[in-house]
Length: 77
Image (cartoon, rainbow, N blue to C red; front, side, top):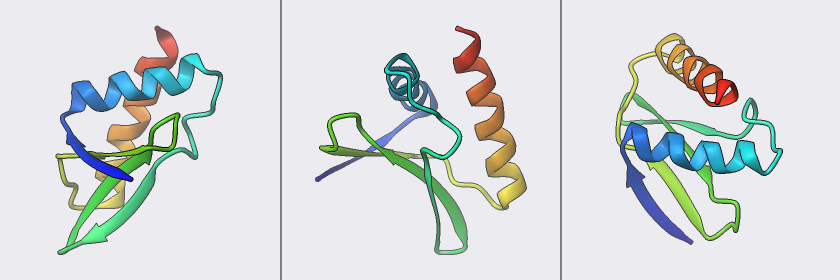
């Protein structure tokens, strides 16, 4: 499986693909703690690529607030 680090715009674009396919975005991402920071990622629709957001987060609150805002934006489009 390919692992690709993406910026926020690229991450959102891939989330929009999942949303268009009718999938839920709420339980999609994988959250991991690496070197004291939280990372968020998800697998592509074709299960061939893992998209990892370049931005790292200091707390679950920060990560989940960011992701919740992103979901709201994607679902409004």
